Amino acid sequence: MHIKALRCDACGTLDPGPRDLCAACQSPNLSLAEVPGDGTLVSWTTIRRAPTRFKGQAPYVVAVVKLASGLLITGRIEGSPEQLRPDLPVRAISETDSAYTFARCTP
Amino acid sequence: MRQVLIAGIGSTPFGRHGEIAIQSLAIRAADTAIRESGIDRKEVGALYLGNFVSGPLTGQEVLAGLVADGLGLGQIPCTKVEGACASGGIAFRHAYLAVASGMCDVALAVGVEKMTHADTATATAALNCAMDNRSDGISGLTFPGLFGLAWQIHAERYGTNREQVSAVVTKNKANGLLNPLAQMGATVGADQILQSPLICDPLRLYDCCPTSDGAAALLLVAADRRSELATTPISVMASAQTRGSARIAGHPDLCTFEATVMAAKAAYAQAGISAKDVDFVELHDCFSIAEIIDTEDLGIVPRGHGGGYAFEGRTKVGGDIPVNPSGGLLSKGHPVGATGLGQIYESVLQLRGQHPNQVRDAAIGLTHNLGGTGVACTVNILKRTDA
Image (cartoon, rainbow over all chains, first blue to last red; front, top):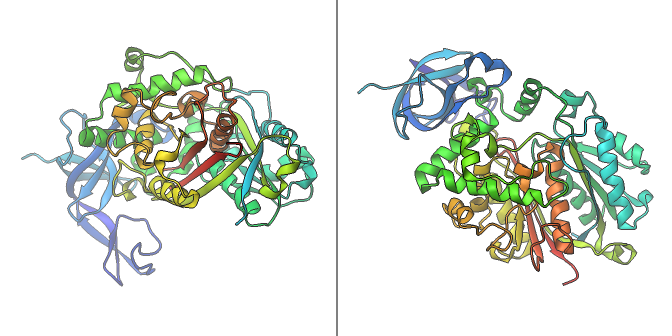
C-alpha cells in the first residue's frame, strides 16, 4: 500500500507530515502525496510497557523505516522481532489512526 | 556580557516527598540557596523556574510567582520555563542571561517536579507530552523506546554490548550510594541487571532512571558583587542552549543528538577550552545507553568508544574523565524540572571540594541536560575561582 505524505507545491520537497509549512522553503502550500510503502529497516525495539492508549497491545514492535522515497517514518512491524536486521526490506500493509504497520518483504 | 558567579546552592533530596506540596519543595531548595549566599533576598531581580508537568500531575501552575511569594522576594519578574527534561537547564541559562546582560545583579534559578504520587498511566501520559504526538506518539513509541532504537544502532555500528552498557548502570548506582541526595544508589552487578525485566529491547528496568520528586536552586550574581558573598563562588564559563529535531524520525542519525553536539561546541567556544580541559561531567543519563551516546556527543570520548570507556572504568571517579559522580539520573532520580539544576548543584559541590564523591583537584566541570526527543539541550561549563 501507499503512504500518505506531503509534497510542497513550491519546491517539491517531500515530508512525512503533519506540517504547516514546508521544512525546506517554508511555503504554506503543501499537497497530499502518496509515496510507495516499501522501504528498509533503520532500527526497531519491542515495547513491553505501553502507554495507556496502547496498553492491551504490548508487546509490540516499533521501528524507524527509511522509505524508498528517502523519508524516515516511525511505524509498527508485524509479528515478532526475531530475524529483524538493519536494512531489512519491509513494506506497509495497513494503517490505523495515521500509524502504519510494515511487514517483512518475502523474497 | 558580564561575568556571572554561582553564589548559593540548595537542593532537596530526590525521591519521594508525598506530603510536601510542589511549591514547598521549590521554596525549601531556593531558601537554602539564598541564605548561604549572604545576599539579601530583596536584591533578587529575577526568578526563572524550570518545571515540566506540574499542571497535569499536581493541578498547580503559576509556580514561579507562587515560589517568589513564598520566599518573600520583591515584585520582580517571575517566569516559568518548559523544555521537557531540559526545563531546569533552560531556567539556569535564563537566570545567567539576566545577570550577564546587566538586566539585574542577582537572579534565582529554581527547578522542581512532583511525580511519584501519580499512577503509572497518568505519569506516562504526562511524560509523553514531550513527544510530537501527531507523528511519533501514534505508533505507540515511548521514551525508553527511542533509546532502544538508538542502542540497536549503536550496537550494530560500534559493537557496543550488554556488558559495556551494564558498566554504566553499575558505576552510576555505586556513585549514588555515596550521595545522600540520591534516590536509588545501589550495588548492582551485571547478572542482576540482566535478570531485571525487559522494558523495551534491549533496555531493562535497571537501564531506566526512576520518576522522582525534588527541587534544586541556584543563586547567580554579577562578578562585581563578589566581596558581598558568604561563599566561595563558582564561575560560569559558558552556558549554551540549542534545538534539535522535535521528531524521532526527524533525526538523520539516531545514534547521536545534534542538539548536544551543537551545544557542546558552542559552550567550549564560549569558555575558550576544549573537551580535554574538563575534569568531570554531570550528563543526562535518563537511560544507560544515553550516557554512552552523550559522552561521544560531548566530545569527551571518541565516537564509538563510549561503551569501551565505561567498561574499562575510564568514566569512574579516579578514571580519565569521571562521568556522573553524583550517580546521575539513573541513581539520583529524575524530577524532570529539577534535574538540570541538580546537575549544577552537584558540580558546584565538586568545585568547592565538598562533594561526598569528590573528584580530586576538580577545577572545571561540565553539565549536560537534554529534553524531549533531543529537541532542547543545555550545556554549561563551570570553574573554580579560588585556584
